[in-house]
Image (cartoon, rainbow, N blue to C red; front, side, top):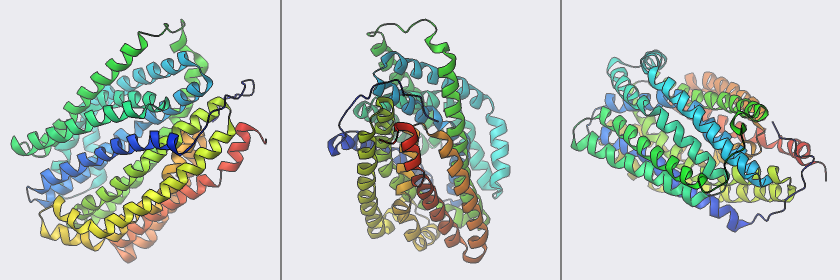
Length: 448
């Protein structure tokens, strides 16, 4: 999906390592604090020494993400549209994109909070774990869904900030959200003795605080700008573009979270110990992903800005530099995980059987950084350029291959088969999108 820029003169700008890193490094630091929430929650619950609670936390996080992260289009779609407006020099449209996204976010968040009992019921049936795991999961999801209006609003705020390439502001907002969440998790979960409910309430409090501050910062900024033209928020063509983009990204995100949910479910069928071990190991995948997400954010902003500016040289250089940096960082991350992964596992849980099981499969988790490089980078490029239909279609193709791999490898190799299927999924996602870049670039910028 691409805007028609045929009547807009190109607006040249230079893309270099400094510009890429000015976006990637702050967002990498910000994103790195996000998996620390999951790690902190795992440590808090892991210190209780109950594998069922740890499994319930993992299952609850999967169910929550399966429902909630489906709406990540409120961040990614907003970033792409704002970046393109920024590239065109269309400041009123940048602001209008944010307000449309925020109104959509709050509405959807309220619906999710009201639907919490139904979501818990569906999640319990999907995970199909042992009763003690299911009970812990239900407690976690029921409470955490109350944060939905605030969390989705934070997506819209971050989408606007990243779309303008204001990575330092994005870093500040994400640090506020994540560090408050971590602090509240330790306080409520351990010190107050609330356990799994405490870590869920920590998320509610942190999301509410971050949303209030983030929206306030942008409102103060907008008050210094000329008011939006009358009817800007009701622009039919802009709304059609937003909803079509959001539809494709929502399908893509839903399928992506479905893949991770299926991974957790298959692990649960191998027993509570395997489920708990994979919960620990998934933190390696999350950590590597958030390293790569910094460069994906740079790719997204620069690709969107290039499309809005109709400046192909900037697009080509953004594509090349974000790939180089992504592979360099992923190699370093995988090496660190392989060298120090056992100590990290021991820190996250005191349960000896979980430590031993996780250690056996550590190499599989550590190498997800390398197999996922292209998937993360291409997601950024295609979201920034708003080539959303391709994102959706290639995700469906990759998911089909993933399911086939699970069915073929899982019964034969057990948990190793599950991890192998995950690697296949990541690789196909990246390669399939990369193969489409030349044709989409010609269609967007022309042949010259």
